[in-house]
Image 1: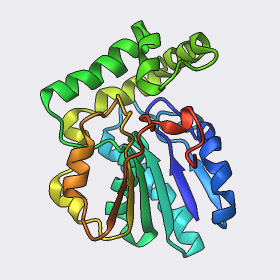
Image 2: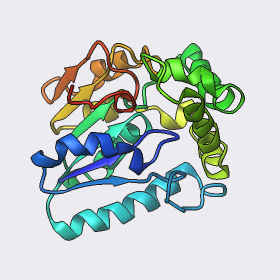
Image 3: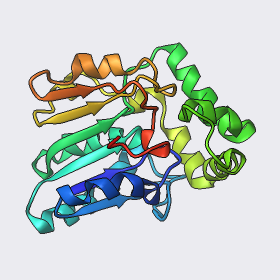
Image 4: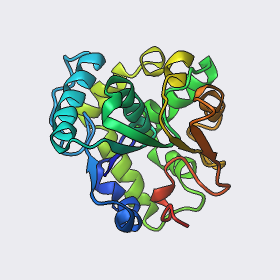
Length: 231
């Protein structure tokens, strides 16, 4: 069974293009709306990030435990960060990880400033500037896509969540990453302009014997937005 976690500002429904080509390979597929996104109505504003994770993970653990079979977790960006945290907390539930440009690297001040500009400034004041960071080519309906980005990032739930995701709270230690003793597929596109430098941290600290790294030339930060990931 495969469970998919989307990235920041996205939602489970956006992963349809990822799930379609994977259907023949899994008995069951499901995508989950993360806290602050989509149809997930967890209260964000007055809840610490650790408590949000705990509540979310407990609910997911109950659901996975009922089937008595570990799952493969797939996560992109923030979803990759959540997938790693879940595997650290409930290792018995996870038999493998597929991580697509996951968040969680220890960031330099320049990297943190880059992300703040994208998610706090561009998302609300100039969403069209996010398009070259997400796409190799300007997509059809670019203006509508930019407007959709602005609308999604403007929700009180997501705004509250972003203030909690500080560089310190989102960074994995080297020991945490190295302790993941399960098969890991790390996919990091060489056209990723959101996390252009963070791949090095993961490649250096995920366990070598368990990790396979793929770096497609044309993959952006969330490559499924542009074309199916099986191409």
